[in-house]
Image 1: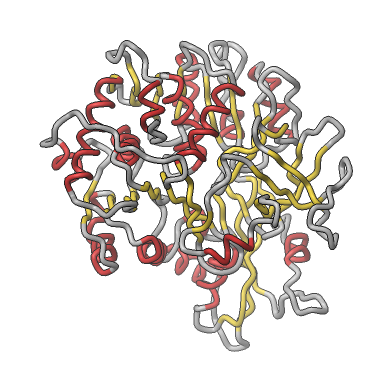
Image 2 (image 1 turned 180 degrees about the horizontal axis):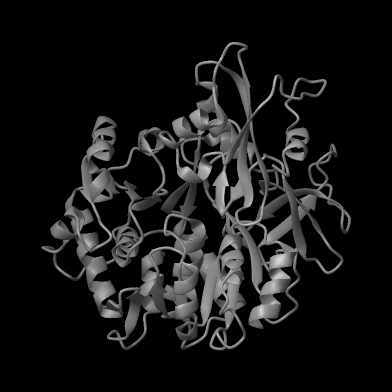
Length: 506
């Protein structure tokens, strides 16, 4: 049996291939037949390049139906998809391309100059462009290809995608996800969230992220459901489209902004079946206010790049604010005592500890990092998530912190060590600490605390301007504070908890 994820999706396409698969904000319609044929053309193009087995296809393009089709084509051709955040800049892309060594890089037409220079220097053989308006060299080349293609056979443990994630030390790590990892999770969520005939997904998430690419898109593809594609989240546009959709997925920031829309009420959401939130903690205040205004209780869930989805509030049972719900079928989740000498010592009810997980959805390991992979798994096969949480007396899981100082701002992961490394390179800077502080819109705002040399003349605006030229905008601190010294404990470790408390209201 062919375990290729694309083969699974294709087996669930509706019988009527003339039905709409994707509708854009501008009113363009892509039938299931259109998507199938376009996927075959792109897959044929990739196959014609004589790429090595397991070749990586790195993609940094804006959201469009063609971008999703490129992902499907990569799967169908048997290669490995590597999505990259569209906000990444030269230093970041240089690292990812150098580390993953992709055979093909696809970028936005406007970025071809600098991206191609990095890619060709790293040994990438092919660089294509793909624009938001159905333009670019990729489509031009694919248009000449046949519109049928036999899906390449893949085994369950063959790689389907690599998603880069980071810890608080060292550089980014590539999480290797297999066809089985992604297929098993998609099928579990299909049943658990009760996807049904006639569902329409309002898709406002980016495609370079687990939430938008895997959770949302996979759900619709597996159900043969139409997607209404928005290029990005816009509160007024989402409100306009809600009456035509049944399922919406977003990060907490989206729900905060929807609550700012005067038209959000039960009538506006009358056609909706399910609102899902993830990628960052949802404030209980937002959870309660949304239920009051819309008549719908948001379903919050928990996952990560290495595991896709792990835990979810139930579809039919109680959805409890402040929790991420119950372990998904087939997924084992445990909370262990982080201060215990026994790595398997489970915490009692409401006792906080380290979250560890196991299941068919858990990744294969980190790309070319066998020692790091071994370090992140227990001797009985559980993955150490790095998150801290607790189970209540009804087995609902709550995430109470992050052991690795991860900041989640607007649904995006921000890793302090990376930003600190850029700040510390600035002339006149002695050291820095990057923290997350509460923010009403983004959940957490990135904040930097900097120690400078006595005679250095460095202003907040200088640090922000320099970082904006080097890293993605969502990582750039919203505030920069200056101190004579960073607070440290007796072991010399910076006490970021002290800094978070000091600057929480700034």
